[in-house]
Amino acid sequence: MPFCPNCRAEYRAGFTRCADCDVELVSALPEEAPPPYEAEHLELVMLASFSTVADAGMIKELLEANGIPTVLRGQADPLGVVSGAARTELLVDERNLERALELYEAFYGGEPSDEEDLGHQGSDIRP
Image (cartoon, rainbow, N blue to C red):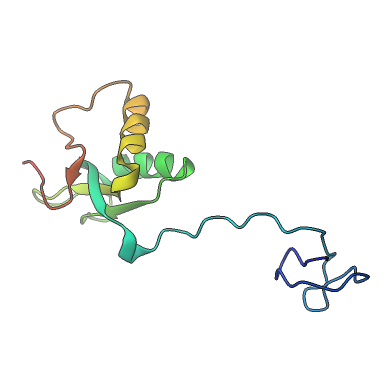
């Protein structure tokens, strides 16, 4: 039986194009990608905290390029400098923490400095 690769509709033998999508039918559908992370199922933990949004953004891009969803938390002025004693926190799902730490350490070429807090629960931040 042929299938539409776009809408995944199944057709009877003899059909070659999807009537709705106007694309050529295929003999088998590719495996569906796993569903994206759903916010209510995430257990966010802090990977690291940064004094500037730009520093956090570099690691955020690195992790997301490697398939690890991230969340930035914190406030900054228009120049990206975090105001007051607050810091920008980079959060990842707990299931991705180990891989995120490996990528972080590879990016910086070793262990994190004393200024960054790594691998702590989002609400448990060291000063």
